[in-house]
Image (cartoon, rainbow, N blue to C red):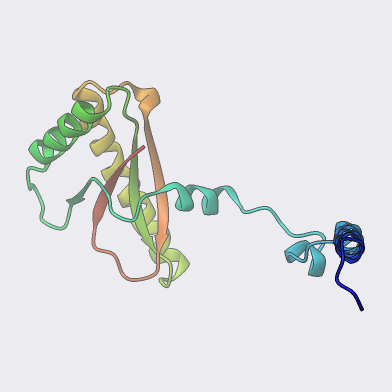
Length: 154
């Protein structure tokens, strides 16, 4: 077989034809994802989305384990530092609820934690943050969290 100018164009044409056939074949394929196996996959619940949006570490954690401890200066310093970095900062005030506790114990912790979180939120508001930039929520915790309130920045 002679290697002349006539042989090379045939190879290129064959390569182009093969590439075009592969593109057509792949173009008709469907990607495999979770909808392939469960076409009615549920959207995440609001609580799951909220957890996903929280950073791993809070801005500050306020302990309520010691009665009459003055935690206000710690909140004031944290709020001031956050405002210095972002003037329209928003805060999430979160009270942890032990997920492994009984329902009665969870209800008791939620009631006490909600009151603690409300006090912290009031202090954040006193430090100049508008109410619409403060949210209070409870979040389940896998362990046995101490009596505390966690402040996250958004």
